[in-house]
Amino acid sequence: MERERDELELTPWSGEFKDRLQERHFRQSVRDDTAELLRTAMLVGALMFLLLGLADHALLGPSASFWQLLGLRLLVSAGCLLTWWAVRRDPDLTFRFLPLNPVIWLGCTVIILIVPLRPETIGTHAPATAVAVMALYLFVPNRIPWMVAANLYLTLGFLTAMTVWAGVPGSVILIQGIVLGFANTVGWLTARRLARLRRQQYASLLDERAFCQRLQGEIQERKRLEERLRHMAGTDELTGLDNRRRFFERADRALRRARRHGSPMTLCMIDLDHFKTINDRYGHATGDRVLVQVASQCRTHIRDIDLIGRFGGEEFVVALPDADLGQALEITERLRRRIEGLPHPDPAAGDRLTVTIGISRVEADEDALGPALKRADEALYRGKAIGRNVVMVAGHDEGPHLSVVDG
Ligand SMILES: Nc1nc2c(ncn2[C@@H]2O[C@H](COP(=O)(O)OP(=O)(O)OP(=O)(O)O)[C@@H](O)[C@H]2O)c(=O)[nH]1
Image: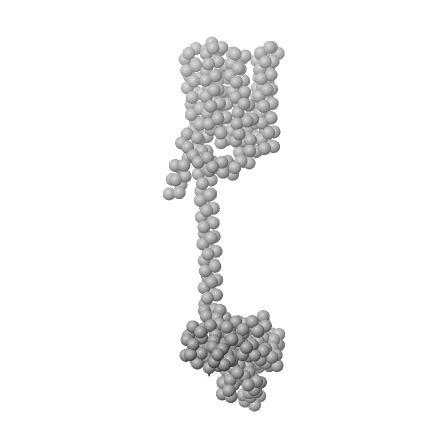
């Protein structure tokens, strides 16, 4: 489908893109390659014109015609070499009118003028002209319109010169006309086919690139989406904290690290006090706002290495790596005081937002968080039982041992 569209966009007689901008981009993409071919053509052209001067000398000797021809040959060779140099300096000249076209027209003129200057060799000159026609089509790439014009000039000029100066019979001129016409047709068709193929190749390359870019874009988008989904799957929607599953994934990793380094780790359970009353009195939306506020305070007032998650409802869980019970007590006590200082939904009621916190260290012989979590939870509920707004430490040397820090 794509290919058909590209073919439709090519000019039928030159094989170029109909769209000028597209053609310009194509030419830019093949510029260096084309310039190299053109430079080779110019060197071969210069060499051919000079070498054929030897044939002139063999045929004409040091006659006036020889010197005239040699002068013309030198002129064309110089033009070819000048073009070679100019294109080498600026490859963009490959597709410009100057300096190539005048040199080619000069070369064609010299080929035509060989007829009156060396009429007796018309038998070899005629096929050589047919070769020159083909060479112009095939050796000078991406300039089909200009090559068609130059070759028509060469063909008509050569046939006219044969008629006027070489005294060739009409039948021979007819044959030569047919041969040159054939050379033009084959040369043009081949050059056009090459031009079409290269442009189709270029168009498929662009299609492929666009396809790859689209694919890359889609892959990126999918990755972003996956990342977002992964994030959402591990995040508590209301508070933005890790949910229980993500928290325990991270906390398990932190525990393994602590075990490797022989460092302590402490777990804390934080529960809002009388949260049901807040919900019942001020509504669920207000309750949500309080939960967000408390979550944000907890996140802000723990260390960067600490982990926090929403355990469920109005309960949060915190893992403090590299913290023994003393440090954990300090951190949680500070947190408790901060939350106590948060604005209550109804300041006039004289109530305070408070939390009860239970903490327990993960013992050196424990490879999982479960037992410490259970002890912290028990400590928390002891705290609730003795009146709330406290931090309770679970000791378990001789069974769970709880100590009130503040009340
Ligand atoms: N607004 C809101 N309320 C929630 C959410 N999750 C749980 N709750 C409510 O939290 C309240 C928890 O009540 P309880 O377990 O009795 O605890 P409490 O009232 O804080 O009492 P204590 O913990 O003993 O101090 C219930 O009313 C739940 O409906 C939530 O996401 N948003």
